[in-house]
Amino acid sequence: MKIYIFADMEGISGIANSTFVTADGSQYATGRKYLTRDVNICAQACFDAGADEVVVRDGHGGGVSILWSELIPKVKLIQGGTPGQRFFDIEGSDGIILLGYHAMAGTQRALLEHTYSSKSIQNIWMNGIRAGEFAIDTAIAGEYGVPVIMTSGCDKLCAEARKFLPQVVTCQVKRSITCQSAMLLAPAEAEALLRKQTMKAVEKLKNGEMKPYVNPETVTIRTEYIERCEPALCLVADRTVERSGTSVEKVFFGL
Image 1 (cartoon, one colour):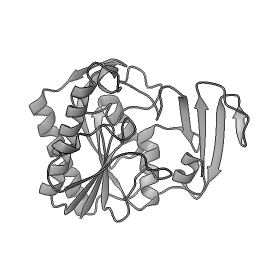
Image 2: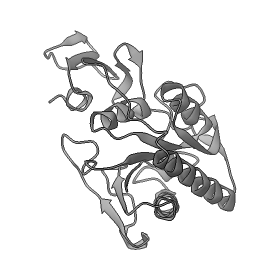
Image 3: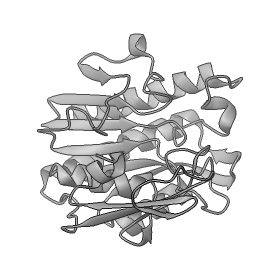
């Protein structure tokens, strides 16, 4: 059994504001340690639940945030860019875990809320419904026939995930207070919860309870940017671009 873990950083245990997640932030070195710790806990729980292979995709800060030297044995790590493919080497995976995710842009009082880029993107809609990274990534994984089995993050992210994908196991490691503050679980409690929920998700997968997200035949993604766009094909408004196609991943990457 192969489990794929895509690890973002904002929803990781112990992360409480932007100083932990930006390369020039005062707490970035600590944030990387917290990220690597959660990856190790999650990966070990996957192995303990019966996984033969765990592939981890470093999905934050250009894909170079996880501390490779501190990973547990047997984990395969993908770092750096993978142009045109969100989940490199997802093929053959039985399930995917979206670890350390955050709520979509505009979610009120959600810790570090944004959708892919807080600097350039205001909102994204998928087939007319406002969508965050959890929904779009779930749809991309579905194109490969891989179900999202678990996600971790704050209370707002967990609620967003359950609304879009009721079957998903959620792991709430903190509660949002504002965009730049959160109430955190104690480290031991967060570790125990992450391990418990990961093993629960893998067991549900083994029992046939997790199914891939089924996408419609045609997908339309509309992106509202913060700044005005250059004139281009499918330009809807000065700050909004809309593309359609048969693949969420290809439409998302503009391929």
